[in-house]
Image 1 (cartoon, rainbow, N blue to C red):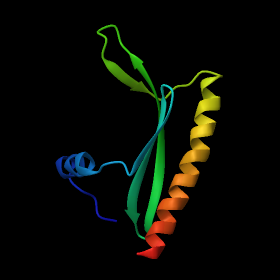
Image 2: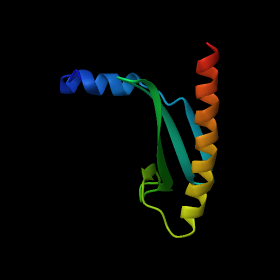
Image 3: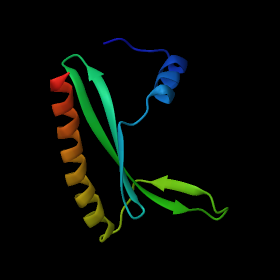
Image 4: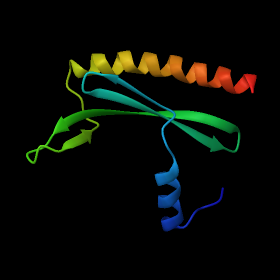
Amino acid sequence: MVQLPTKEKEMSQENNKPVATLKDGLIKAVIWKNEGEKGVYHTTQYFRLYRDKQDQWQEINSFSRTENLQVARLALRAYDAISDLRDGQAED
């Protein structure tokens, strides 16, 4: 595996855009496309949006009991979205 120097790694992450973003209220799932030794794979991150004291939007990855239900629904949608993305790649 090739290790990128820190600056190049940061630049690579900045250029990497999510392939999909799904939302359920203030909860969102972000799907990323990655390339590994075995080919393309996808990962998902989950965030809760909130406004801080300066009225700026922030993201956190901590969820309340009821927000876990939203995360679960988004996880199902993310699974379907990744399946669709993989099916589309197979057609290329």
